[in-house]
Image (cartoon, one colour):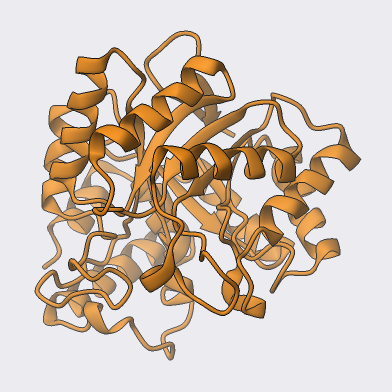
Length: 328
């Protein structure tokens, strides 16, 4: 396994594995025995960075979520897992009531809700301090100053380590970080967005986010990372739900454009040259790139996890990386 640091403050900075494990479906779609086996193998291989959210997976049973955090709590206790494994979770997108969704009935990011949600997550995970806590989605009904103060208070009290943000417009990320700096409180240091080798269209809004494709890591976010090298991008859905593994699987609609075929063709060429799978090439491309990117990949079996783990040691040549980057 390889590792990189996240965070800039000595008291909260953590070294984590360059491949993060997504636990979104653990305890719901993925049963406990399989989930435990995947988690055990990940840690055995040196993995130290696990990601979840307080609303995973509310859509499984029409509830409010929490199954993933609860399973991770049981796993931690049964295995004696301590601070050596960094567990990140998110808040703000948990439905307020069963049978509803975060798209129209999310808990949001008021200071009171941030505190309440973080406390529930700490209890489910069985931890005294949440290693990394994200603002999951935007809440424009709450003043940004209140949200920033709410997160900053938890860090100051010691119940949260690092702060992160996901699926926000970049201008709001920068504004929140500026407000935090001016107030002398902790700000966002980790950004979580969807990012992969294939590029989506940005002229078609995502169905999940009403303001457009805020979940994708586009040119603006990558430019922001160039300007703020202390930030880390955690890239969710790097394998696009299995698109790279199965040529017969339909692409998400916003990836259906002429550039996709060209990039897939180069990807398959590089995979053939390296003897790796296309998915492994994508993960290696992210891990070894010029930006501090940590791919966040889920797995529903130990076999899937093993394939992902093998990507950590895959070294792409400068020529292969240039061809992947240049494909249009």
